[in-house]
Amino acid sequence: MRVRVSRLAVFMSRNGQLVCDVPDRHRQAGLRPAAWELLARHTRWAEPRDEDAPLVKQLLGAGVLIEEGSPEHHQEDERSPWRSWGTAATYFHLATRTLDGERFVTAADDTARLRQKAEQEPEPEPFKRYDIPALALPAPLALDSAMDRTLRERRTTRRFDDGAPVTLAQLSTALHWTGGVQHRFDVPGFGEAVLKASPSGGSRHPIEIYPVVRDVEGLAPGLYHYAADIHALEPLPGEAPDTETLLHWFGDQSFVPRAGVLFLYTAVLERSAWKYPTGRTYRAVYTELGHVSQTAYLTGAALGLGVFYTAAMRDEPVEEVFGLDWRNEIPLGINGFGVPHPQEAARQREMAAGGEPGFSYARDEWDGLG
Ligand SMILES: Cc1cc2nc3c(=O)[nH]c(=O)nc-3n(C[C@H](O)[C@H](O)[C@H](O)COP(=O)(O)O)c2cc1C
Image 1 (cartoon, rainbow, N blue to C red):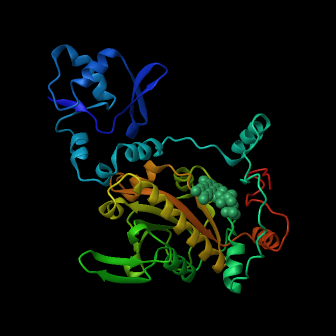
Image 2: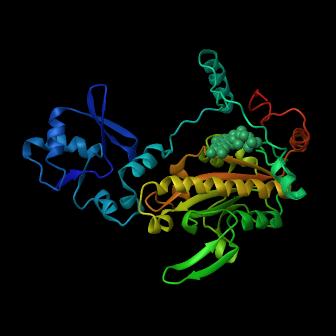
Image 3: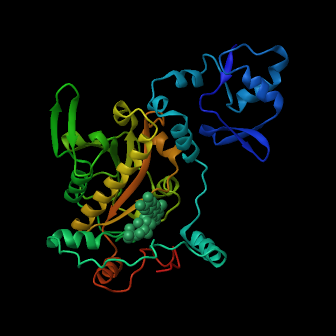
């Protein structure tokens, strides 16, 4: 048997001790000098010495060492965007990838914590100013009225009208603008270029949409994949997730299962990595998500639907159900769409017209600041 140090392992010093972080397992192991010396002998495949057997067993168990021919070894050898994106991007992704047992605080608990914190440490200023005279700007021009209204009315909605379904036409429209294809053309010597409503670095469009249908008129609840090239839905096998499952997947946020449809976004990494083999591309993937989500928000606003975005997600169970392997395709976050609760719709209308501003939370979920 030959063993070597895992390519995922990252070493750092903490409180005077050398620590190995194995990020795919969210585990850190403090290393004694005997372990450092052993690891230094196994930066390449090597047979362990007999007297090292107990320590090797421990380090294999912790994932710091891997065995030649093991599944971990084969996975490391597979072609993957992470090989070219490098250690820093891989580490960041795995260290922040949420596992099945991840704990999320409730909005109420978080608010209580922040209120306490604000007493000791005031909230940072939301605006930056220089201590120099500022030049006043003319009033903003009016955009065409529909655009103006859509931008003004884009808000996060977390209160939905439980009995009111999203229509199939609304879902189709949201998919068209959020992920649909506007133009396709051949770039000689390169391949096909695709243009969508949201910009994409190098026009790689790595983001896929998986609609999770809860309450859409004329469509069975369940998991779907949006086939962007033919503007169609591919029903995925498996049962429609129930309320409890959705709460588990999306950080126990009570409003998530109340949406008519969720768009789960993933990124197919190879699409971006093919053109951009550097770790900075990982940043671009999330920048793209921001563009796509804003397009979803604006489309929802124009359709009169309430929209939310949430990054709170337990990645591991979502990956499992959708058959995603973090080496190739990663879940990013979700937008939810639904018919707003009449009280919430009225509150947002009043706010857009100059009324009292506030967040969209039901009273029982958050004794909110707004
Ligand atoms: C990157 C990002 C992550 C967010 N994550 C969450 C979330 O986990 N839960 C949630 O309720 N809202 C989430 N939101 C929505 C924000 O809370 C919301 O945009 C903010 O309160 C401002 O309200 P507005 O969208 O109406 O302007 C997120 C928004 C962004 C851009």
